[in-house]
Length: 61
Image (tube, rainbow, N blue to C red; front, side):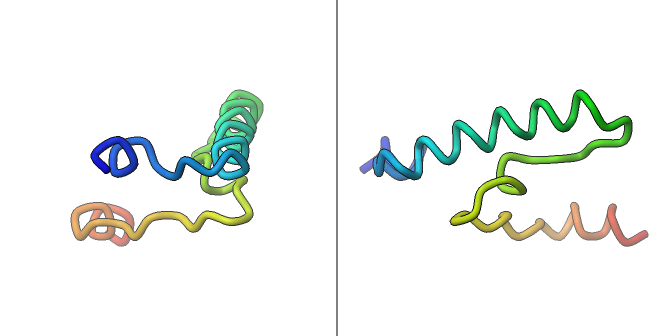
């Protein structure tokens, strides 16, 4: 159970989607000057994690 909490789902499709999302984010961040892409931006079945209070405060002002 600790492995799944640390590494995520063991489902092969989700692991492949995460790998492809990571590569797509890496490529997009290299090509776009102000790129702030994350793997979740390119994953169809995964949502971006909720921002923490500190991240929200930094983003909004």
